[in-house]
Length: 476
Image (cartoon, rainbow, N blue to C red; front, side):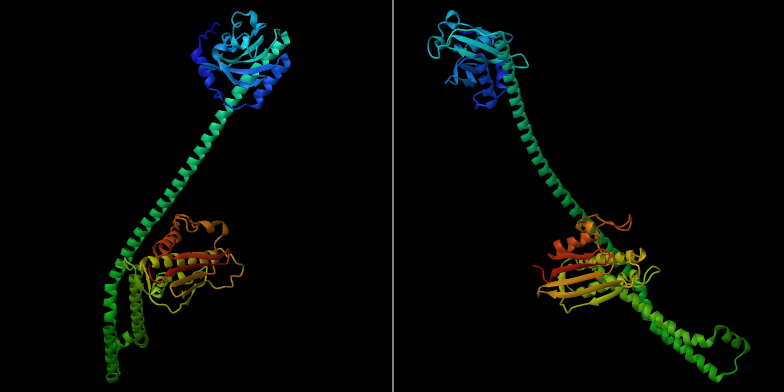
């Protein structure tokens, strides 16, 4: 038996076959339908889709044959692929010297008739055949030949579709993996950005607290010395004035008729008013100096520059000091009446905390409350504005081990759409230059991260807001 020759482009042909990734795969209905149509059209008992590999022919689809493959040297199809442009038709294999002694002719399945149409790839490589086989000699009509050729083209179309589906699935898998990777990367970037924002907030907070503390402490120090001098000497001034007034009274008793020039001067300065008003002025100066001393003390207590560690402090004192610093914003203006402060302090012990940072939280929340009240009255958000602008501060002990501060106002409230963002760093609804969006974010960091507490809020848009601070009385 003569062995079939190899195509001149055998290496490239095999590469073209392998790219379809179809060898040794399960049967598929689309290919089985094509072999069934070929057998029916050509009226043959056997029909095959045969793919010629390096050492074998393997049947992707078969009708009328039990084997799944045969050696390549026995394959009729090995001759068909030699000419991709022509069908191979063998009317009687016993009369063809190429096949007469072929075991497939001399024994089962006793091939007599063979017609194979090459399966030609778009690149022109014949990778196998669609063939029909009969056990008796015969031939095909021109219509049957044309139909077999058309069906062979459909086999290639199915192979192309199959490989495209494989590529598509692979692309989908790749894209899904890319999407998973992107989501993971995005999550990592989001977490990194969140950490960067938190770090930035902490750095800004530290810088602000440090600079604020230094500034407040510096101002307090600069004011303190001259105020102490004034306050300490006011008692002497008061005594000296009383002595002068007593001396003046003695002059009037013993010299009731002064010189005309002295009499004119007495009338010019309005002696009686001066004697009455001068002690009042000195008393006002005394109260003013005492007020400045209290403000200086509040500034020092508010900044607590030298207290960087947690220590027990009087929280009420911190709130009062903060209110004193904000007093100028509580006073009445042309747009609104004075903001009332209602304090309902509970009986509490000293709280272990970072005092300066906690004071900063009170400052930020109270400042926001004042802003909300000013917005309400400046924009006339209520027709009658019958309620006085009010801030209510309540403190109490909760569960014997937590201290709670509630700061409520009857201002504008917080709009529903911005509520999820109010603790985000750099988020603000205030105009440019009015705020940087760090107040509540810093407050959240101080209460939750530094004190292991909670910072929550309740609000009714257009009516009121309440912030609730809860921290452990003692650190863990």
